[in-house]
Length: 368
Image (tube, rainbow, N blue to C red; front, side, top):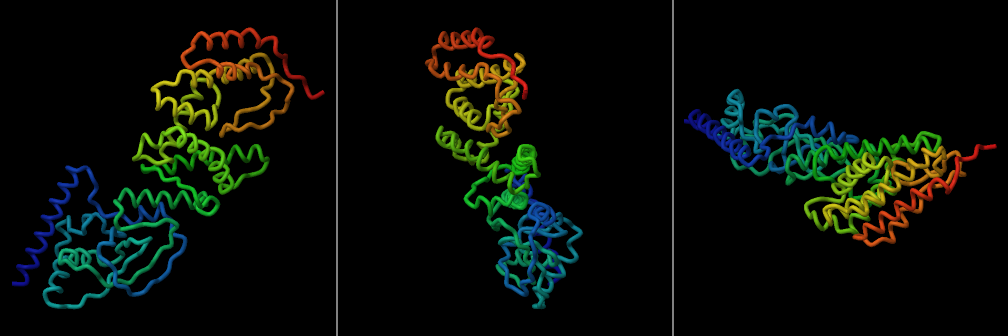
């Protein structure tokens, strides 16, 4: 009788796993256990503690260290080869045999099975809410909850890795850098690495990653977010975060730089992007950015050193010579006086710049 019941229990559990997989496929959502190595690679716990024997809520066990392919998200058995061990555990329940505690690894508020996957599977199928476990806890810098979807847990893991590189949770504890898609933290980190190289050059010493991250946050990220907030971009996309908008603006800045030949900086890029979102175009804003690029290229063509070089974040730093004129520097200001729809005014400003530029200055004088 018991043998028939354990075989029936396993077959029923496998059928449920098949249905769950089918529903998940139709809904295009994952139904897998989270591989511990995948989370650990991103989280990199900063130390471990042995927590001893504990009573653990089964619904907080979300993954496995090595058997994540054998069970689905609800620990239902997917593979026929698990039948022997699964049925042995199930048989122990029918015979009132006390099973040893399982072994779990805790990260945040979620658990991963180190030993005892079949016991967790059978316990869940029996409707058991808690299970005895020996627990080792890995200490991480971000919260992880069992209610999070697998993608959310992995995103939090990426966030932990980002903090490990930048220390922004310590240097800028009020930051709110929370993109909504996987891979975006790495994109932001690469931008910080580029900023670190630039800082090392202008400081004439190696800038640390922590210094670069704090400087990037103060002078690139925050100005963009401020403009995005003031211009209502975040209101237009309620399902997106300020970090998402920041990345949109940075992609937009790359397009502007390719189009006009110079770096417009974070504020101009964010302003132009906001205008683009609002009006599906922003020709005047883009014209102003383009004119600044024309002015810089004109200065180089005339042989003059440009007095203020563009930097990765749009700030300026002194060039070797400060005697060269800023050819066309007044053009954006002149265009600012034109009404948005006054194309004649804009064209006159451009024409004036073309006439005045050659006579406004000469090549830069040398140091002597």
